[in-house]
Length: 134
Image 1: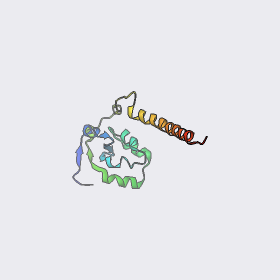
Image 2: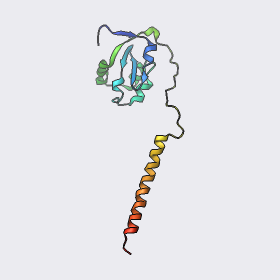
Image 3: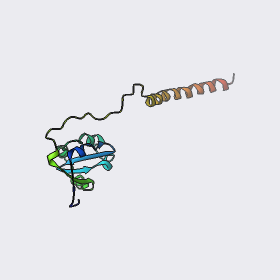
Image 4: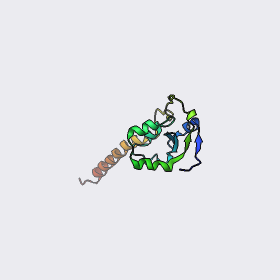
């Protein structure tokens, strides 16, 4: 950790709430955990649910190991301006992709997973039928 740490406003930190850009506030310090998202044992959803608030309680409740606490040093990017942290967190719904009723790519894959084996089976029966000696 550097001695001349930057002080971040809560509003600035709260904007970093995506898988590719995730900052957390723990014990008054700000951590950019984006590089750790894929490696976190609890999954990236756990980290994303702790964004936009003081995640100290979430972090402490899990009971992280000493090695996990030491690992935090490499993600430290500054301190939080405690005056800007709201006492109560306002609920912000997680961002979801737009609703796609037919889910075209997934739908096509599922249809192909069903039709290709049937096609192969039908082809095998046809070959067997036409090559069988009478």
